[in-house]
Each structure stands twice: as C-alpha cells, then as structure tokens.
Length: 272
Length: 248
Image 1 (cartoon, chains in turn cyan, blue):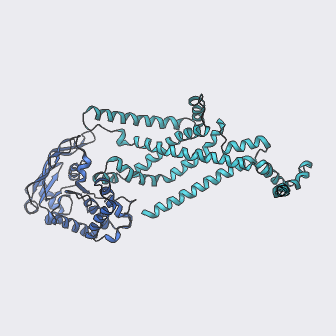
Image 2 (cartoon, rainbow over the protein chains, first blue to last red):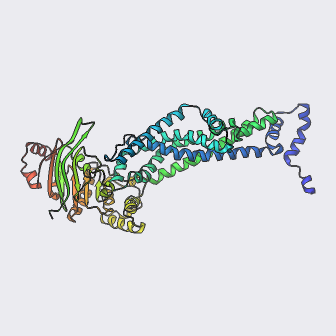
Image 3 (cartoon, rainbow over the protein chains, first blue to last red):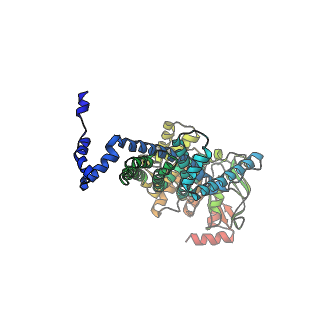
C-alpha cells in the first residue's frame, strides 16, 4: 500500500539528512551522536535485539534467583549449629541413622559453600556447559539458570544463615513451648524475621547475580551483553552497543533496588 | 486442692559445658494438680534451669520428668504433644514481632489444635477481654508496653488450654510500675485453679499466692514448705541468709 511507502520514519529522514556529511566525514558533534544511535539502535530494528537480550537476562536471573533462594535456604538450615551438632534422640537404629545422615548433609553443605565461593563463576559455567552438559543438547537458558542458581545458592546460604542467627533464641523457645515442631517454628516464626533482617544483603546478592549473568555470553547465550557484542560486530562501533546494554542493566538494577527499598519500608512500618 | 500429681521430677541433673557447670545436682519435686508452686533462690541457683527442664527446653543430663505419668525424657515420647499442655511465659516475653497480637495468639491453636480461624479468634478475643486488651488485638507487639506485652504472652499460652503454666521470672524485665498488672493476671489465674510453677523474685506474690514455696541454692532444693513456714520460720541457714537479703 502506498501509505507504507510514504511513511519513511522520522529517524530515516534524519539519517538521510546527514548522510552526505557521513560520506564527506564532516559530521558535527550532535550528528555523530545521531549516527551512532541510528546505526546501533534504529537501523534494521536493532533495538529489538537488545530487548531480546534483556528478556533472556531477566529470564535467567529470575529463575536463578529462585533456585538460589530455595537451595540457599536449605543449605543455611543445614549449617545451623543445632543441626550440625544434632544428636540422636534415642539409641534406636533409625534414630542413629537419621542423626548420621543429617550430620553428613551438614558437612556436605559446608563443603559445597566453600567450593562454590572458592572458584570463579566463569569456571563453573564452563564446567557445567562443556563438562556436564557437553554431550547433551539443552537450552543455554537452562544451563544459565543452573549455573547461576547453584552459584548464588552458596552466597544466599550465608546471608540466610546470618539472618536466622540474628533472630533471638527466645523466639524459637516461645514457638517450641507452644508445642510447635522445630519445622513449623522455622517456617512461621524464624524465617519471616530472618528474611527481614537479611533483605539488604539479599538485595545486594540479587543485583550481583543479574549482572553476573553477563558471563553466560561466554557460552554463546544471547543475553544482554552478548546482544550488544553482536551488534558491535556488525556496526564496528566500539562504545555505543555496550553503553546501550549498560543503560538497560542499570535500569533493571535501579528498579529492583527501588522495589526492595519499598518492601523494606513496608516491613518496617508493619511491626515497628 | 487434690493430691493428684501432675508433674513428678526425680533425680534431675543438668550439666553445661561438658559437665564443668552443674546447674542442677539432683532435684526431686512433685507438682500437684491445681497447686501454685513458687520457686525462689539466688541468681545461678538453678531455678530457671529447673523450670526449663519441665517442658524440656533444656534436656536433662540425668533423672526423669514425668508429666501425668509419662516420662517425657524418653526419646520415644513426642515432646511437642506434651508442650501443648504446658504453657510457658518468659522473662523477655518473646511475642512474635512480625505478627499481630491476634495472630500471635491464634497461630498455635490453628496449627496444633486444628481450630478454625473463627474459633481460635473467638477464644483469643475472650482471653484478651479478660486481661483488658481486646482493643489491641490488631496491634503489633512493638506498639505495646512491657506490662501489656507480658499479659498478652500469658494469654497466648492460655489459648492452647494448657493444664500447667510455667512462669520464668515473668516480671523481672518490667518497669516497676508495670509489675502489678502482670501479677494481677497471674493471681486471677491461680484463683481459677490453674496449676502453676513460678520462678520469681516477687516475694509478696509468693507469700500471697503460693501453696508451696521451693527454695533452691546451688542446683538443689534446699528447703520447701508453705509460704508461712518459709518466710516466717525458715529452717536452713542458706534460706535464712537469702531471705534476710531480699526482705529488707
């Protein structure tokens, strides 16, 4: 239809306007900036590639945070002194076996945290991608979620453990004296209070994780960093694609910081 | 008062730090149904440890604690079921700060007695009215005074309809002007026939409300008797010494 032919977008018109200057290499400052934006964002709908990359980054981050929170909380509980030094209630075979298994798991949790925190995330990503899933066709997003989630869990575990230990012992005693099991006491009484005091550190961890997913560009997952890198390889602009990616990371992190700050204020208002 | 024994303690010992600190060195005591037993004694005499052994918040190193004939130190016994029947009030209140008063009181009845929300709240409101705090049902613990907080802690325990109430220095952390309101609730409870074991420094309360007073020192019950016997005619030199210091 003729309408489509007529509507050359305003961006195209501007481009056409400066094109002679581009050829002659006589661009002024603002024209240079517009040239960069046009080539790296507008031309061929490249902005869509950033958005797709952003989508992948958010997807991986969201599920990795979920994995990290769940696994991290379990690891944190296994690392509590009362779990580490659990003693069998009774001399029965199963009581002894149960206590033995719990102690073993506790040791394993400690070792896991040391191992993950003591080695680079990049190395872990490479091992999971080429080592563990090397011969299996599997979505890179899933590999990213597994690698970043398993990594984050080690850090989350220490944050949650700190949170749990900041809750007064009297809270546990009050719960247990009412007849609640240690599990119910943990779920209804200790963890909600631990979560509140762990929130600022947790916010830090989430921010780190979101940015660290950029390492997944190493295994050719087209997340936000890789998307920028890919555009650079097409346009040969050394700065602009990375700056666009950077602005998007910043927007995500600032939004998250704002949301958690709001949550923190709400928790503070409700009980203090 | 009947002579039906509800808690029977035999040869109770509790050691801390691998036996370096012997908090309890062989305590025998019977608590009868409907009785108010007040435990007094100097700091570090093992009063609180004794009380905390009654619902196994501390695991005894030796000896037995029987509740209604069941030895609760036996690992096969489900201690949670027994704790439901034994309410406990702490020195530092220990209300759950992230829950409203009402939620503090209904959590355990809903989870353990399988009460519906409406049932549990009705019972909680009834008890709140009795201690004059019904209008604070939706407040958070940090919005209450110490005296109010401790009164809530008492009725929170009562929501489980316990057969015994254990009080661990319930007024020690309170400002002096708030001690009275908490003691009043405890007196009321005693008059209703609740079985109570109270660790306290409130000698006036012991004298007025106790059926029996236990004096503890260095992990043992040194002397026991009616309030008249203990306060007016103490036999043991350590009891005399202690009372001379606290009853000025």
